Image 1 (cartoon, rainbow, N blue to C red):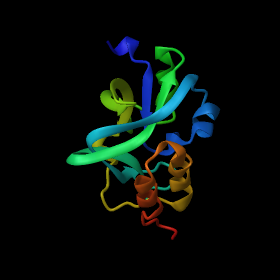
Image 2 (cartoon, one colour):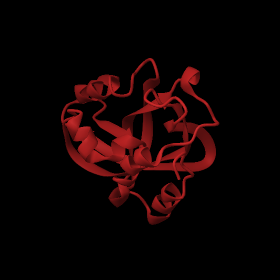
Image 3 (cartoon, rainbow, N blue to C red):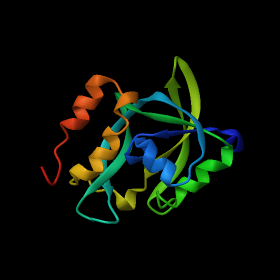
Length: 154
């Protein structure tokens, strides 16, 4: 099954389609998606600024993470993202089931490894702008929540 997964669910800075394109990911379609039973956190330690948080998702009943769903040109395209996510060192890539257009879709996404998680971290405003670049695919209330995130450089 893993070889046939043709979608990538981005909830962090890769919601910025321009960023993903510059990273070389070939995709044929972009759409909105949600991952139920998970919550967005900024608790993954940044490699560039160890006191700054990057996006991560954690299991949390009753919560939902919204994001951008990329339909990959080929299933192997996802491997291109591993080096930018420092997988498997910082993040691990796993398959989740997201909802998109009323359908369940098997998708790759990334989870931070415990050794790089610190719940005291907050993101930098410049990082958060990458998430907000995906605003056209996100519910208005979710965009408002992202805009309200406390940042280290507020």
